[in-house]
Length: 402
Image 1 (cartoon, rainbow, N blue to C red):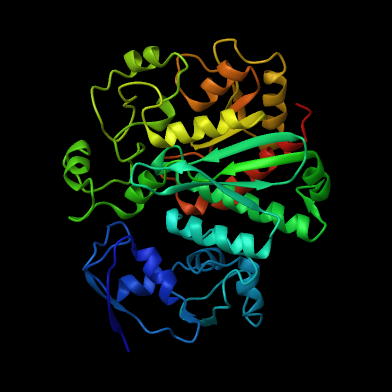
Image 2 (cartoon, rainbow, N blue to C red):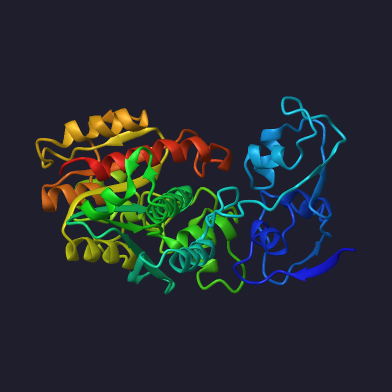
């Protein structure tokens, strides 16, 4: 029997489905007025369907891959729970059993990834792996804490960050899944993509800031509602639209990756964006935004040998900046390219980015990684192969002499 749920602030359809352990499909079936492509708002009443004893009746067009992705599990897990069925062709109208998804994994990769998911996963990871160390490097415009996580105690410090751009929230999921896999390999005294995790642990200190722009990510995933502190401004800056899925900036309408003192004036003139909006507004000056200030201060407080900024999309590696980069930067980029399959690109006509500033200020290797292909935000169906490419690249970055 279905029952009613009143939407609370910060909830989305996917978060509600996850909380009640029902599929997004079943949630939309009993709420035909809703669409997975639309936002829900606080106070809205929706029906929660009953759980069907972890079973599902296959529909026309279903495959093992589609069903496993829909319910957040691997194809092998699904087939193991239904071993009497043909593993090649999944017939329509068959009742199949749905095992608990990801019983060992903590970071789920089958659903949208926002700030609340990030905080929950960080707590779970720290509980399972006490050697992970978390610090707060600052706060966002709306007061959300920006966490950084350290894994390893070696002398060579490497930094990876994600979600500078709000609609690139999948990069946070990539970074968090890598943290989990790395920690698990250490705990099990195993390997990380062919490299001894214990060796990496002793030689490197990896600092990960998995979500630089938490306010922007939440805006993309949840939209605005009357009680949102920036509701009227954001609606106006978004061209009178309630659809924020393409939004890149923070909630001040400033592009955080155009905020750094690396020929900022040239970038401002090139962008020619007059005021706050979804993308490309540089702000009134470099480092005016608290998120950019936080990541800059954090970078200056450490001794990073190399930094990697995760973005989407393009399957490219940007490694240079106005000839400030060290002599071996191109060679390192080539190694990262061989590991990931991404194209190493010598970029020009771009300034004021985090990677640009790091190279200019410290004269050390810095890289912007553009994972995946398509229109941001990229679909979660891309995650499996994006993750493999990104993980191989990050392991290579940890093993290269810098």
